[in-house]
Image 1 (cartoon, rainbow, N blue to C red):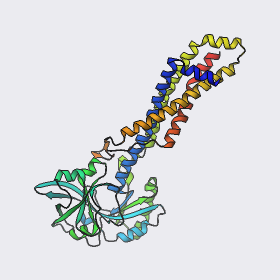
Image 2 (spheres, helix red, strand yellow):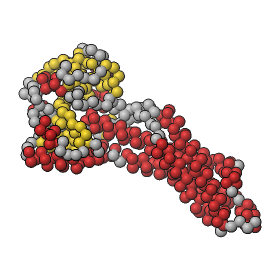
Image 3 (tube, rainbow, N blue to C red):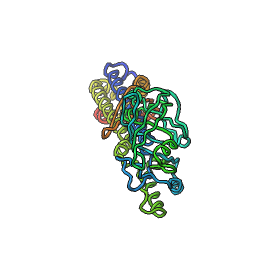
Image 4 (tube, helix red, strand yellow):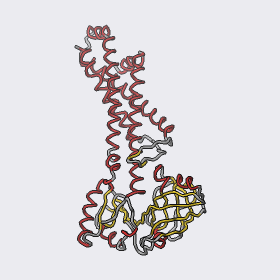
Length: 387
């Protein structure tokens, strides 16, 4: 019966067309799972490490649009001690974030500067040239697109112009020691990082920071963690701090649904594959009426005929799943590294270069799904064939 099932599939042009069509649908489903996962993961990582962490603790009067340095606060160690009481904390880091003007040899550009503690915080950028910033030296690492806009390279000096915490104008120089790429267009063309100690000295913020960034082991608990830390800070320093979970960024809400979107796209591909199987078996049953009649005269029971169709569907599903998985894997090698850009509210969050690599669970889901949808596609044809 197995040999007959294989013959019924591979000895007809219709069978090859069905196998090819269903394989393409499986490949598209597997690629959609991998692509959506990589896009959402890359974008969420960019938001967490370059913008807001999973939580931000700032002064209650702090405005992200203005980034005023006079809202910096000195008690950040106490804040971190209180925040550490939440059991899901992975890491904490202090930052000073400012919007300022960069100047170099007659060129200038508005930029967003983030002063970090290089010992405690290591943003996951790809270093294109140079090295990471130090702890206290007056140096910076700059996004690749911003460096190109200002025509700067390693060891060049950039002049920083911005108001300090006292309202007067601060002008100081920072040496470029590294050029990075985050994969995000917005970050690469407007962000630079420099040492926290250098910022505190230049902005008259000795012992102060503008925010404490918190990373969680499970980012989905950001809302719960924010409520806990807000309550604890409210008891110790009422009315002084606020905790901002990263869900305030609408892009996070949508990106966290990336897995669901991938499932929907994959399900649509399998549904289309199911219609291919249905058409194949419907046409196959209609064209095999003489064969079915002959089998009945030989005493073959209805159950055995249905079993034959199920075996055919299983073989077709396994072949389509294997071929589709292989096609998806090969296609991923060509697609990886291609540029893609998806934004939200004029901000480009998604990596411009993505690595698509179907994982073993994706391939197994593709094979299992192809078999299940093959069975689904034969129900009506099988019933009609044995009536």
